[in-house]
Length: 260
Length: 377
Image (cartoon, rainbow over all chains, first blue to last red; front, side):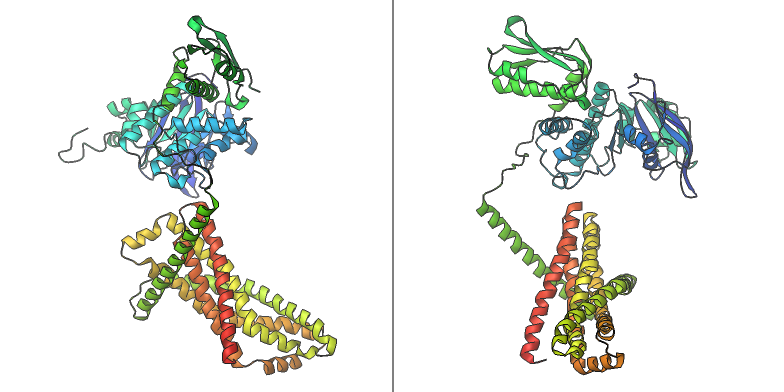
């Protein structure tokens, strides 16, 4: 794993399209090792599509995604699989396997990619579930727990193998503010202790300002990124009016509205 | 095997036990053994406390966290304090995080299997619940049908047309194949027996009666249970998972009228047509054997067939098929509407829709056989 602060993920001239319809064009940015990186933007603006391109679920129309010195876009399926084993992905809908208990969900990648004995897998799975605050729920099925708990269980599965890159698609959507804050703390601690790079799709402003090191803003009007940098600096010195509107929740536009 | 991870113990000051963690710890390389520490804690003189020495720890991940957690549990078991101040900061933070949320009281499920009497009782209660749900469902479907007759039931005509296409025209290939082969097989098996005493000509009668009265409608019913009943269950089950059915209810649109009625209607309209077609195809299958194997002429076979069955036989088969259509559709919709809310539950719903559909078909056919026998039809 590269040292903190070095380029980890590079997106070069990426254009995403579904057939003729261009979602976003000419995205160029670098994510540094150990950063918590946010992908921001309006609803339906291609945030999740970019997320899917970065983990290889969608193919770019043009451009490429690089992990260190490896061109992920041009890599063979086998090379991709090797690289993907260093990813931890939390999908928007948690995507827990409904026929398995939480411990089995978290233990499955451990069983596939390590030489741990079943008892050790269970021990590690229990630890991961304890980390996300689900101690005692190891033998529950996903359908038996709440949506917020499913999110956290999904995160436990994503961090099962101590990934180098953690991809989180709207992890705090649907969580109450306190749970959302706890999740932020957890992500921060995981990053600090394990040195993982975190890529997050989110429009939770408290999270973005609270733990974000770096971010890009995808503008749905011009169909490309209009801002890149530290979210707190972008808030104070917005390079584009749309960025300002997004980061202040359009406070200036409401009659009588005041910035929070 | 544990890569380069090193874990050993040495006595520290004041009767403490110092556990040294060193080297490169990686989950992918496996966990090192803690047997020596377990032995030291279990057998040797009880240490006053357990401390850590992590000066030589070069890299670590969840493997180290897991082991430290395990040591913590072991020490708690024998009542020995753990001093974790000498662990790396990141590791301490993770450990703190793992203990941040205490276990919720009563959350843990016991995996002990209940005694057989309890299981039998639970099975009985579940069966009673299932029967009650089925009866309620049939009742609601009847009310819904009554609303349809009074012209108060609402569903989209386009949906009905689509379902009719799916369970009518699109089922023709499989209905053709199965019924043709069944007709062929009956004729073949019958011919071998009947020819023994020179009654080969009656193969036509055998095929005609069996196909028209029983097999045409039963085989078509079973085919429809397999391809359409399961489809209904899977579709409605998935809608249930996505709360789409609740969305109908909250808008004041009865899901029964909107989802179940068109399906039951479509299948009960299409089944008689399919059955009629299946009868023809089955007789055709028999004719292939009669003409090619027994050397009968097509006219001869046709006359024999005409003589053996009447309109009553054909009507009986087609009437039964309409009933089977209703049963298959109801079984599919029942299982779909009452399915659980995950992928496995939708699969179970589809499976049990087919099983229930076939059971209902066979039982109903038995009742019909009894009635027709009593009535002399």
